Length: 145
Image 1: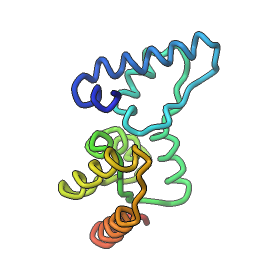
Image 2: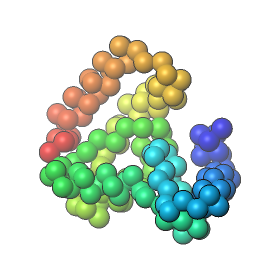
Image 3: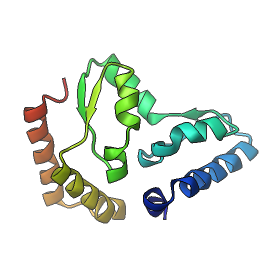
Image 4: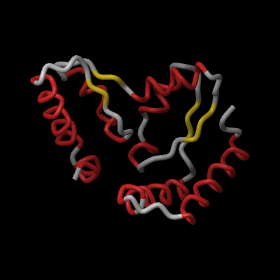
């Protein structure tokens, strides 16, 4: 359901997540972390409206990437994550470039993510293709360092 909302109704998606955050606030938690990438599409809106502080995995990841000296990274995930501005913008504030795969590879990654990985269907051939994609991109875009 959540991916359908991301694709068709971002306001409803944000409200869906905000309702959950409000339930957590009602349970008197001190903070929340949204541990999936795609919901970070609406992270800034949630952070401004939530009654509890939120931890951004994009910000935390950027801080760690900077700490270990990375300068250019490949971003894999759902189409929404790979096409979203939230990772590139956050990492850019740390002087790090984040690149999505090219259009064809991006479509392939999204399809494998939603049809296989989310369903718990882990295939050796898919793993090999991901390795190949990463190796190709590392070579052509000089990622990782």
